[in-house]
Amino acid sequence: MPNRSKYFYAIGLSYKKADAEVRGHFSLSDTAKQNVLAQAKQNGIESILLVSTCNRTELYGFAEHPFQLIQLLCVNTKGTVEEFQEVAYVYKNKEAINHMFRVGSGLDSQILGDFEIISQLKFGARASKKAGLLNSFTERLLNAVIQASKRIKNETELSSGATSVSFASVQYIMNNVAQISQKNILLFGTGKIGRNTCENLVKHTKNSHISLINRTKTKAEEVAGKFNLVVKDYKNLQEELNASDIVIVATGAENPTVYKSLISTDKPLLVLDLSIPKNVNEDIREHSNITLVHLDDLAKITDDTLEKRKTYIPAAESIISEIMAEFNAWLDTLKFVPTIQAIKHKLTDFKNSEFNTQRKKLADFNEDQAEIITNNLIQKITNQFAHHLREDSNTSDESIELIKKIFQLETTNNV
Image (cartoon, rainbow, N blue to C red; front, side):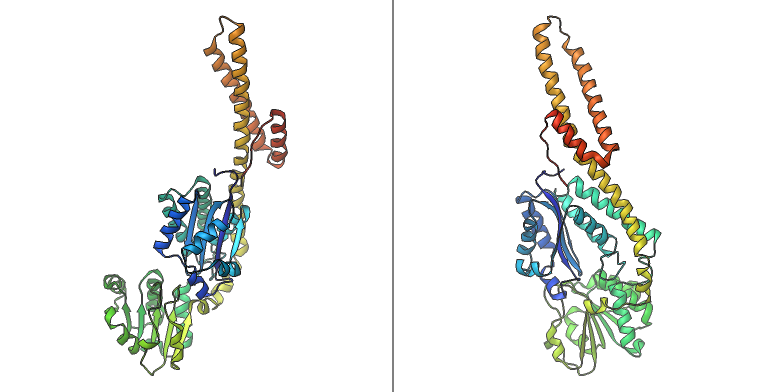
């Protein structure tokens, strides 16, 4: 377990208080994530887990003060501490544990029941472990969160129906564009959201005029091959933008990839930006024929599927409570460990002192035999204390205090 003077924190910001632009300021690129891990190591932080998605950026870690984690985030993004303080949340110990459960279970997602976040948590944990920054506490917590997520998926319908950012975007198009099957659709960017959107487009629009563009053409060709779509060259982006009726941008770039000067068409053009940071510059709104819709606008679409999902929240929360109780029980046993170890050390000191006395008194003192007997006794006595503390968890704090007083022990507790 970590140093006893340190606490477990969850710090971050999400769609709840930070709009897409602000979330973009705090978005962690792969390079930034590596920098955070390297700096955390230098600063003596022993466990940290990073998550950065289109809906949230979060750091889970041990620190003496949350500012240590906040600073790591702000130094490695475009965001400032002042901006962070306006929109952020900081959870400590049990609250931080509870927050990770809600996030990992889809209860805190922008679209309720969207489980994409759990793979992001796993990915973050792998990166931390590789950097030697994932302690047994964080690893055990994450495994408990994964367990809760799996049970919620299997035992409830919280994630039933095709509702996600990619589905919401297709739903928006179908609700707002007439004769959708006749329209030219361009998908720019074939990452995970791009691929999911593509699949939903093909499934729901019955449209055979869908083109794909990606900086790396081979990636676009992989996706296109699966759905029998057309791939265009990245160098023809401007031409394709102006030949389209609908453009979906999911490029995941650090700066805008679509902007005002690229647009020359006069016909109506619907542009959906599914990227964080925003990949479509707001200046394209200056063209009166363009409708720009962002991720946050899409997430506000609440349909029957989402309403149905809400009825499963109590069942999901019940599963979380059950698994969190198991985790907290394990956590509670950890606070016994320093006391049990201190008892063992104290009894060993008594033994060593008694051995010194007996050596002087007895010429034929059988030290080896005495060692075996006393060690067995010490083990049995400490086991008895450990058993009592585990079984009587309601009064364990009072028991620990009493034991400390009797044995004159010096220990401190943690989370």
